[in-house]
Image (tube, rainbow, N blue to C red; front, side, top):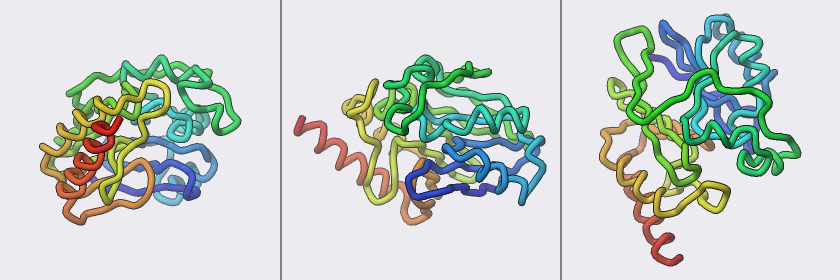
Length: 216
């Protein structure tokens, strides 16, 4: 499995192109042309079969309709966030001067579901509520890779919980679950990819999040 990080600007969410026998995208950001141009530099976009959204916030899916149309890829999201997509407020589309989604996801994901990459390995869906109720992380056990969406970031950071369906105590529970994984490389929803003692960074996020919730 090869992973290519795609990001059009510091304010945009990361998109990750997974190059495998069954190629897929994890999140897409908001700039469809930029993402499609980067993909075309690497492979035929029509070979992408699936787009997985880590949660329902607009900065992670704003470009998905156009990219899905251009590639033919199906769109997947966790069941608890599917209903948030079309709401201007819950999807935070209004914060970007946009509207909620006009599309329906093709695939509804659930916790512990496995998504095959066609090479004998899978991405495990881990529901990590906190940033949103249906936030997910994706774990590839063979490479010990974690695609963390906006649940956890490097250097002890974590996703905000003050937006619709966010919950600090749920986030702490989610970070506890992630802290139990064997992770060598973290692919966050924003910012840089890190290989530097990722379990330690997740534990630091858990510590900071726990203190934040305790002070509420």
